[in-house]
Image (cartoon, rainbow, N blue to C red; front, side):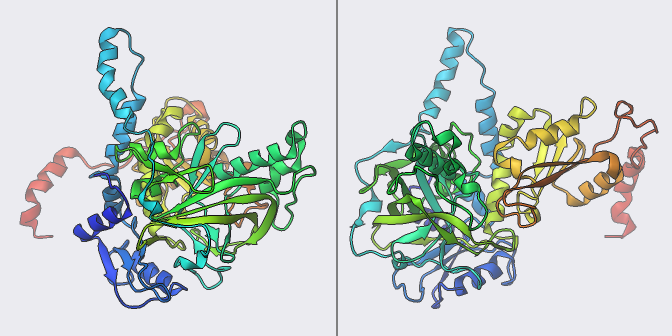
Length: 519
């Protein structure tokens, strides 16, 4: 099912028994976060993941409900994307990737239905939208929104589930990213786009243009997001007053919110992915004060800009690693206009020690984008990003091994893939290992390795949240070849067979099992 807006999605959650309405007064400062943490971890007496929560009586914000944990289970992720299984979307992607160039007229005719389906994915601009039911160019404040403070040592309140929309100053390509935003005051917030994110690259491109032709390539401005905490400075020649326009949508339909976190190929806009997932185009509307388009049915839209000659300390923030990410210098978002629906719903999330809501979103990315990984790594059989590895610390992959050294080739291929470049540890196993079964992986992997021979280290970019790295954004990674070793890989000793019972005996015991009275 495709949802028109957040409210239709909330109604669907309610109908499916996946929503809990909370009418007791709660405080957006720490209290909502503590309640949600207990529910998402199963500490409230339910299953891990719990239910989506709609807080209808938020202290200081009468009439503005807060939705949280909307994606916090496997079932809700499927509901959000309108499928019974995430594998349905993976199969759809695989179908598009398997299309071959038409060889004749009949082949071209057969492709027409697929081409017609592709037309459903493209976003379309409409004249106005529900997000403009209320337009506030003056007399607005970011504190009018029930923004949460999630953890005691957070630097303040943070907008945690925004769809941040930017445009490449060179190509005009749009990007939708999810970057937390620390609210500084009524009209400014931090824009936490880490240096490897697309929003940060758009910012650097704007800096290059501001620095002037002929100097941009060697200007320190192009590396502004790479500096360590407190050491970021602007380039000589950067013109004061330079701006990059930004829009932020809060409270969008679920496929679009999810699309803001997916590792999209560089050529594909997230608005396209948000249309592909539910098979329905995203409707966009022009902003009031900036030259950007935003989702027409969003609950809130913040319009504004980042000033190119301005940085400010952002953080600390209790992050998805389970630790506070450190304070650092980031651009400042200035709000020029706020538009919203009548009686808006505020959508947010909390991150911290796993498992939490983002765990289920990350597992959905893992399943859906496996076909895209196979484009570059065709021998890939399956992938598991364990939740406890917070997605960038551990990846377990199984491969169809065909030649010596192939596991190491796969490691390096993964480290060259977009956001997968941050993976700290990669474990490669044979195709007969179920990577989703941690017990089987540990048993077989540890039996198959000679540590000195099968573990390799390399240096490269690491996630900005990796507090153990020797430098910010730069550190070491480890790959473990846990496949069976061949003589062509230098192992001359015989490789032992795995212990397996005779099938005939198993069948005999199966027939006797009930009579044995051992259940």
